[in-house]
Length: 66
Image 1 (cartoon, rainbow, N blue to C red):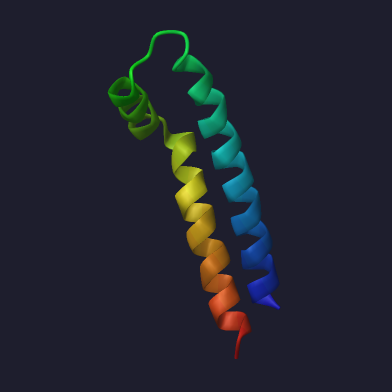
Image 2 (image 1 turned 180 degrees about the vertical axis):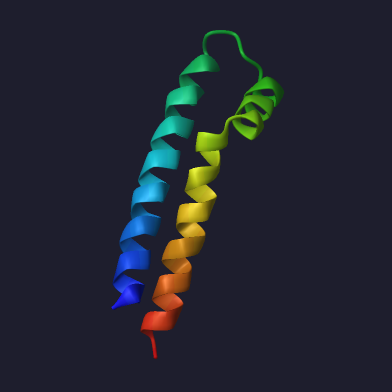
């Protein structure tokens, strides 16, 4: 049962982090270079939700196989 909770939390984190990252992509046409964009993404803690959410989801899916 905990696998489903971990999957849903991971999915929510992935959606939140991915949405914020895509939102920050709007700064690239405004004059931000790709290097500056990557540095911005690295400095914003909410962008770390995407990889953490993916890890939670994959972990939950791996434990559901048993």
